[in-house]
Length: 128
Length: 128
DNA sequence: CAAACCGTATCACTCATATAATACACTTAG
DNA sequence: CTAAGTGTATTATATGAGTGATACGGTTTG
Image (cartoon, rainbow over the protein chains, first blue to last red):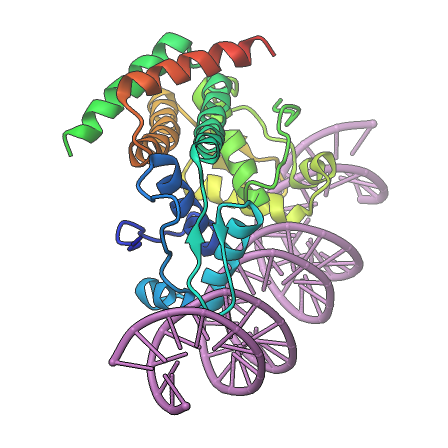
């Protein structure tokens, strides 16, 4: 079952969005199997040290996107086939990359420079 | 003088951070000359349709970073030599890229895939 | 000099985020 | 069956972000 072990909250934005993104990344990565159960709202809130309502907000948005299913009394579970996985993956990758490209172009960075920087930082991150 | 023409506000975060980032990107790109005057808080607030206090918050942070100077009664102006430019540029590029790399690795993206994606989206953005 | 503009500061208000404390109906495990 | 756990809902409170209005003193310009 999903553990939320690798989710470290920061001050970059609303907590419910960080939870939402974490689950989406797991789905995109294939780390979370189709039909897999999610830990309950209360368990996650205790793990992260946040309010149950905050977790509920993230779970609700996941359900509205059709990525999880919830039934009163029972645990929620993931419903994400290969098509959904691919869709989420493309969505997340596109969001991040486009924002970075826009910022880089505004700073006068060339395509070659951008590729070199990405390659360099990628390897640097590997070494850590 | 800096016009704030290319700054389009979105819902990605606080307005004062978007203004802060816009000016920083201008400094990093060399679009803004050293000693150049900034439009007043009131002018910018009217241009963007936001409150003067919001602009003031961004200007204040710029001053705290030593990138602009303000004197009561007179217009603020940029004080950013080549060293400061380089520092800001590295700071912005590193922030964006590292965040994207972290997200990509968590989604199981390979380095080659990341480079191909960046190259592809860069060209796609050129065409727009 | 005087009017216009500027940086700065303050107060009150709205809204989103997050917390806190419950409550209720349903499912599941002992 | 019973108790524990679960999804869901409600109300109240606190905080930060952003707005709106206003004020004061200093600088610039005609």
